Image (cartoon, rainbow over all chains, first blue to last red; front, top):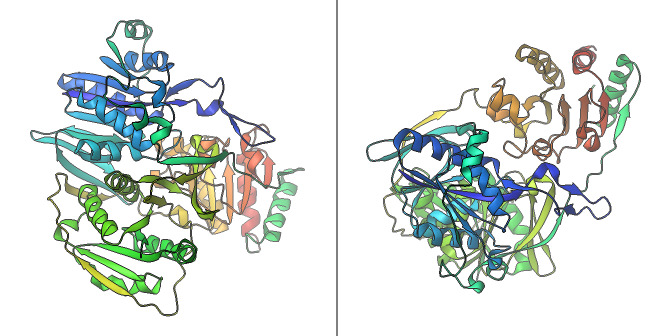
Length: 261
Length: 317
């Protein structure tokens, strides 16, 4: 099985600080990594290939720092990586990201494309659907269990109210939830070996994409503000002996009209 | 006339979106329409009129019996093109999100999913959504002529009209047999809980030492007439509660009157699901826990002491 795993480079969300006066997020100096569910997708791909043979290609779009970020994916078990790095790709929205990924995937032979159900930062979940549509593939989203049958795949989808088992022919695009597996932590040897694995870099030129078809210029969205939400909370810490604080709390909640007494 | 087109596989969400659509259509100079897709849908149109749809498109096909995004996307695209839809409003359920993205790609449209607010600013339609893992709220505008927006359930109130009538338009859909096939559907373990509906939500986190200690959390929730929710690790890693009870970025977004966070540190991945609460109470033995920063009332104490006393006090007349 030839599998392409799409990975998004995101800032480490735990390390984002908020400027107190302007409520703006501070992204400078925040390390970049791959999203949680992207790692689930990669882990699943590596397990499939360990079981059934084949090859895992890690495909990622991002800044030049990707050359560093990708090492983790290779250490986790991807056989090779393709990095899509071009200044023109910066600020791509979901539709241009899907366009770039689709062009790259057309150059890579594969039976299965795996993605996380959403990125850990923006969680829009749009890229898998847009990519499947662009490539004319079936999509099976929100997958928490993936098996293969004679004719294709069988997947358990995690919907709000129920689990839905579906079958689909290959090639197909599958997006996974965090329940599907526990991504491995690579060993030191795997980390050392990662740098010897094949790594290719493609720019817009290799993908026959001109600068105005991608990035900010072609983006269908404009972010007009991106600020930490205003939280006007009372921030009252109740103090005293335990019985006193419990009484203060029930009194306060009664006053607020949120409990009936 | 170009229009706002509403669709959700869940009628109640479509009614919320129609109610919001009524508010915006005059200013935008657009009509308000809804799409009904399925094997037999005509009977539902009168309800849609009563929420303000001026036109209801009926797309009936046996191929729409199961929700496959591959058949629903071309069906909705056909409706959008028929009526010249300028704004498509969908529900941001799991199915709604994947449909919004796939139909947007087919229409060459920009798309925003998980919108938590929608309003007109200047001449444009602005949607808010959480970004950077819940650290921020991004206000976004779509630059393409057609715009697809998937709105979180319960963002707007469904307000029926006293009377409503409109026109139905029946469409012939030419759909292909989907390549994906549902072979089994089963209810999730843990029964049907809907913590999003709860007026009082008692959430528990990793401060809880053992599964059996959940009993006191249930007692407190019962005393408050509320539901129990949890952080992701308690359900996904420990399996103490069903995944239906996870609150936060990868779980439910809740707007209860009262939220109690017990033994919860307050990581953004959880708190993004409770920011709409009227009153937030935090109980945690670590005074430095970030949850106190977003709380109205905080008790710095051991949950094993506080929770039983609180439950007792609430049940003592």
